[in-house]
Image 1: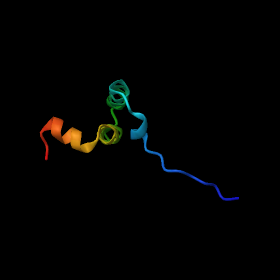
Image 2: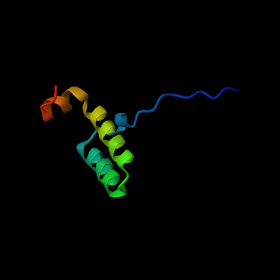
Image 3: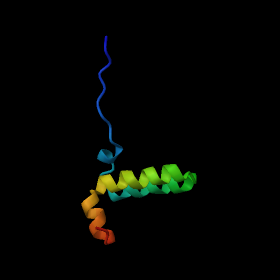
Length: 59
């Protein structure tokens, strides 16, 4: 029997500002730079990159 898998993106579940803050706080508390970078990327995807770019002034 083959195992069927589906793609999972945690950004799909970070739908509130509070959940995003909680993820980032946990990443910072861990002190792991890879975790922090991953959390920032996940939050950016959750918010939408275009929105993040606009809010930060990036192009």
